Image 1 (cartoon, one colour):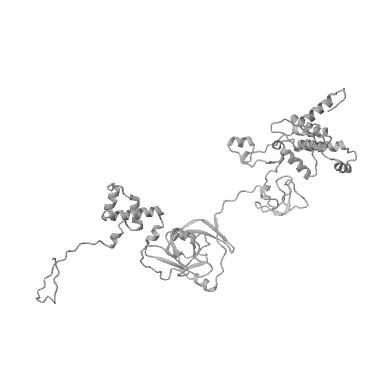
Image 2: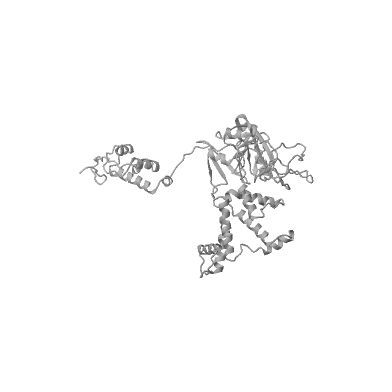
Length: 486
């Protein structure tokens, strides 16, 4: 860098700035201008940085761009638009407005996001609150205070007293430094004129509690059932409704005349895979009927309330709701399977059996529409039966290694002379067999799989029988034979 013998301090300072920025005689001037502009737009306020410190870094970054004969922004087009509304606008005033916005938007987000939102909301209502100069922007950042939103759900009584809301009334809520309207009772005559934001041209709409109290005829509040606002910003204090206990059943099925006639016969019960509760209309099928809390059910055809509950006489483990106005007697398949063993074999028949007891089974036969039917007034098949399990089925409960241990225990019992299962158990328990191949767990598994480790004993033992000699009294040896010991 060359200069006349008269060196002024401004030239020296600029030279030092260029050297600090990495500029020398071989540096590309466009590259230097690009880097300076990039540094300017990446100059953001740090978390603990004061406004004056941030402003100095911002100004230094702007000056560095100017030092490299570049512009932070081309304001020619902005100036033309500015002069349409303000004829006295100049390039300098337009640049000041741009730099003021840049300073605001490069401030710390945590501290000034609420300010950004306020400025944007003001524009939505037709007010431009953005600063017009760098000085005004600095003043706004310095004096801005983050609005404190009251805690709507205090965690202790002390917070309740500090909040200043006597009687547990809901506190006012601040949204972007604007206060929500207080809750009011729902007027019986639907006169909403007392609400903030009421529009006389649309008197049937209730304005939103949230500023700016927007309204829309296409919105119906799920809380107060009035048009104009969402439930989250409902302006009315609606008492919370008591919880209602109900269950949904599936949509009604279409039955033909034959099916309808069958299920209306006394003693008829249908099992429904879509039902979530049991309901009966015949009192003689229920025992121990007692009043209960109202139980409301809803379906496409309307609702029904059950006020009595009892125990099913045919299925003692099941309870049901009783209402003589109920159309049919319904048992929920889900509740039935939870209490009783049900078996369905479609290969044999479209029906399933319910094992009510050791000697009684009830068969529900399918009759269309996904329903299964039985009439308890008809004779029910009652027969004794025994439950058999094959060895193959029993082995499915154990791993391959556990089954190998069972087989080794059976083989070892034969190797030591087939003692009884009790004796074999005692031998293993008392460690009387050296280097035993089995444990007590193997014996227990063998008892479950085979009925005991001594499987071959089930075939019978070979016993010794003494053969006595027989002497014939006949002298004709050709007609008799002598069998005896030599």
